[in-house]
Length: 381
Image (tube, rainbow, N blue to C red; front, top):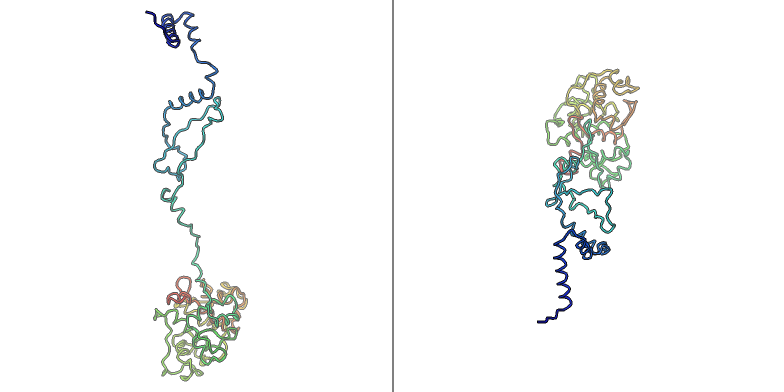
């Protein structure tokens, strides 16, 4: 029976026969020639499609990269986010090179944004807590804020710049209320210091001293200066019961805050209420209310060593103790009002602004109160 075969079938049959023959004699020359005939074209192997197919197959057969332990010098502030891990990357050898199109791309580490919650506790504290400035001593009293009153602003123009905040606070505290009695120059003023550049009288300073002390210690009656009763026997010949300031001046004498026969100064029989106040009396009356305890023993040498005043010998012995105690006060009255000076000038008269500013603070660096602190306690700052 004759069968006609197609050309593909004939070729396939021949190929099978040849392979069977070659397998039977693998070491003979014929078999090697057949292998060369059916081997892949070397030029085809270097073509891009075949090359990329081979590369892809090789990469797919590589083992997955394994997570590694963090190195010891890895920054402790950076903590990997949940779901991420570090992988070890092999360094390419110096002899191996890849085509430019196959160079590995360096990708940024995912999700390295560090929030305060991810930082260690000390790091969070360092970010959230400012470093405090070192403090070697108690800070100065709060800086007063001038009032917005148009009347007071006008008055403060005549006050030295360094004293203006003190005057403003004392005015708001009500220390100058009695100044408005018979005030024809400024009838619309409610409570302010009038004519601050004028000299202050002894009676006016006595009035302010008692008013400022009692206002600042409004919640502490034990530190009040008590006013004298109207039926008391006058201590001073020139301050009778009919004097408008009798209860104040007599009260200061009865408290021993000003020299009088009650304090042993038997020759001080007159107060001289309308004389102008001197620096010596300014400090002598005020300092005992700062310390409220016996003042240190003082000599001319001690005061000179503390202040370096060139005119220390001119200070009355009764005032030396007050001047020396004020030198030991970090909130010194002399420094606050007169600044740096090598001349105390005990007999120099005092302006109304200077006398008022000295009353802005009562106490020392250990215990004290300012006019601004008193206003804050009243909710009026």
